[in-house]
Amino acid sequence: MIEAFLKFFVVFFVVVSPISILPEFASLTDGATSAYKKRMAVKATVISALIVVLFAVAGTALLDAMGISIQSFRIFGGVLLFLVALEMVFARESGTRTSADEQAESRRRADISVFPLAFPLLAGPGALTTILLAFGRVSPWQEPLTFLVLLLAAWVVLAIAFVLMLSAERVTRLIGQTGSNVANRLLGVVLGALAVQFVVDGIRATFFAT
Image (cartoon, rainbow, N blue to C red; front, side):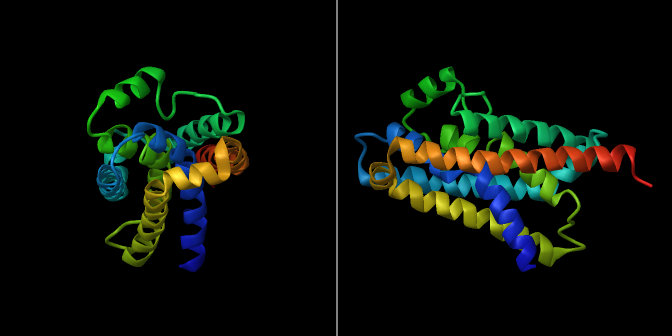
């Protein structure tokens, strides 16, 4: 259980990359009151946690209903996570988080908790893909302990993101943009390797399973 927790925690932490959210949160809440920042951080974290639970419980059933095998999703999910990794390594906008138009729209909103904080920054396509891949073989009814351990790991990552959002200005000043970019690139390398492994596992299970 500890190994499962740590493995999924690392993967989900790398995908969500709470450090990369700091500059965005600081920019979106620039000049706002402390109460507003705290309210947005709380709402975004709670909404993200609920989205995670929804995908963890019903994600596999949704794939089955659409006739999509978990291995097919594993291959596509690996490709998607690889794009996220490239974005992190090269510090470019690939569209896996937000587009320029979406960023402009978010700055015009009074409530930024749902968009863009909860989705797509915290519980974006990469995070949801990771949830589906991790929980695809874990039934909450047949393996409740494993399910809860993985869910707890995801919630711990979101809790870390919440704490970082509350101290966004201080952390951003401390590590600076350069520090944030360096951390992102290091995590991107790890995520890229994990993404390739997802694709390899999916292809092996699809074409070479005995």
